[in-house]
Length: 415
Image 1 (cartoon, rainbow, N blue to C red):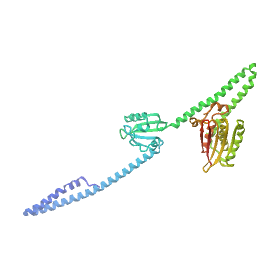
Image 2: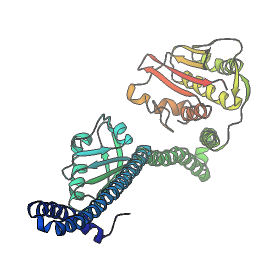
Image 3: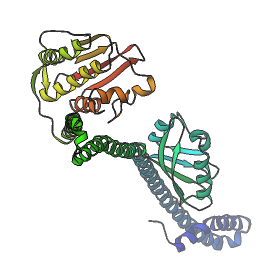
Image 4: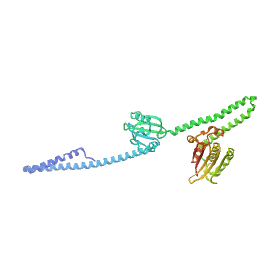
């Protein structure tokens, strides 16, 4: 405990009483008749001085303890501040949201891990936000927030690749002139919205075409004109063909819906036997077109799969190869590797250009629309393949060259 103000005053007077002690001693020496009084003064002032020195010593000790206590509290506060700062940094780094902290001019003071990954940054401190994002809109939002006006906007940033973000900027409350930037990546959401719009439009188009044909022919038959009696068999066969087309589309849509919505039921399946059956089933169709279709691979390769769905995958891939190959061969290969099972379907058909190869697995996308419809294709086959393979934990890929042929590869885990 620190001594009171009275004790502090006594401690301050100790040097003065020390001077008086010296003066009393000099008086006793220089003026002997006053030596008795000088002795009394010497004793009194000496005692007072000693008391003052004692209080000063106590004050120094108390202050030393108080300083050590304050230093301990300061150290504890620094540790606590560091802990909170590290916790905030870890929180910011753990978020999937891009976060920047800049000064009022747009110079970056901090960037979390998501920001560094999104823009390929090393040490971002000191860089300009304009140079990092290559976006004048983001820079303007930072300057606007620095002036006290927060902003929020959806932007498409072209660097380092096209991405859609919801960007927000606001000024830090505790430090004037510093601006926070948050960027929420909504590219996947926008892609899904586009896919949904395209899917609805494609379904509507695919269903409208046969329904329009059926209606026109039915109305013609309804008129029952005697002169049109010879057209009746031809119209009826076309109506049946269009109804079959509608049935195929709805069946494929139901398969897609089932794959996406249901839990995968696996059992032990011999993929080699399954592939051989699929090839044998489509050999007549290939032979009719003058194509050579064959299987290469082990006699038995077992794994845990959904047999019906894998049959659907291989039939779609092989039939797709037959439909898009005018002459040559179609090779179906099975390889039992250490980590997975690889199936390849290679053809010498029309091939696919590089810009289309990235889209062939989209629903209703066709490389050759006329050929696909003529062969009865719905544009859903490769989408079904991708969904089933991915549901099994596998991958499907395409290697193709225009007018040289295509190779579809399906990699499947064994369990």
